[in-house]
Length: 252
Image (spheres, rainbow, N blue to C red):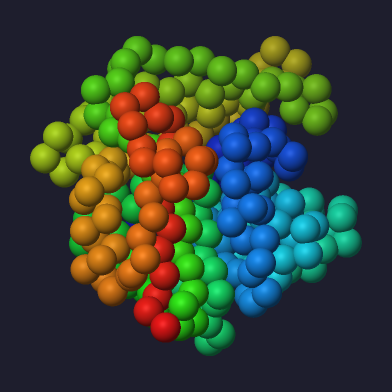
């Protein structure tokens, strides 16, 4: 998987998806994990946007991320709050932990960063292997976006130092057979009106059908699958929903 956030991309992520920001996912995951007494794993933990509220609620959460820059932000935010979770630099396809978890959680569609279908299936099986008997896997997917507007967009943020960060993004490819899209992302840091640095990244995402993912989870060995739309547990997804959440268990 090559979707690893670099220095400027991580800075933008940290400014845009700051600690305390929720898309409805933080409250939903807190509710679903309310009675969870064992260890929880968050892959693709990012800057800790979801991790930190879970920790502050008293849950035993640890996480990993492929980006050292992201982990740097996460550790700094945790230190500010006197939180000391176990964090490590790992990838979806190769992560390994000796302990087994009561839950694995992946908010905000991060699983879709695994663009290769075979790798995604292997990762789902790896999740199963890292759960305790009866342990839960809970994750979000965004519905198909293969036909979305391809016009470029430009966004900007002011940094802590008063400089300007910009992001220009444009979708350049949609593969209907592979169910993937590729977007070009150009990050620029401007200091005193001059371009100080820039990064060009290629973001590849895979778009799953609801039934396709349900079949994948069952084939991997998961049971008790519940698919919910727009963070309303047990409410079947419908056209127009912005997010679909899957919850399933490893057999006891």
